[in-house]
Length: 166
Image (tube, rainbow, N blue to C red; front, side, top):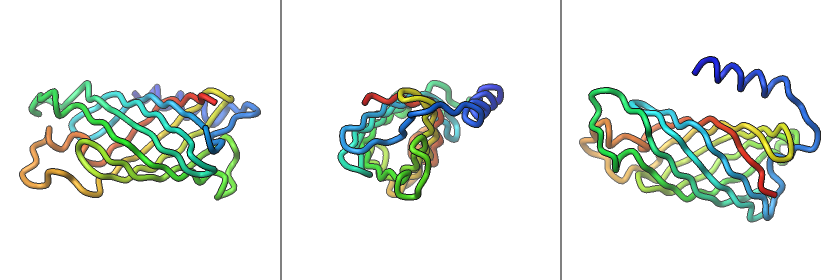
């Protein structure tokens, strides 16, 4: 895992190709796939975003935990989560390079209502990397949570690749 993160960071810092655009506004389409990391589990995550305006997008995201800590209840239903989301793209507002986008937003899922914030960096028109952090604002179940009840209902971190479907 450390080798993969080092390679990813090294690539981001050393590759700089022309014409990449992280968010282009209305009609912009992005697909992301990566690793989902959280307490007592790790898995895969995929998301899709569609641009509604100059700085606004809507989308969906889904994740499934593949590995869970030993001693945690192995309830398959608790491993899956799906959310709809709304994001505000701030790259152009803060004057960042067109290759970079910073996007906070809200999401409504099967486990909670939450906040996410992420960043994307594109190497070319079609390929980039992203990282995203998620925080629950309101949990649907709040009392007597078991470790498996906390899956997708706690702080999460995602890292992976993003594809541009312009």
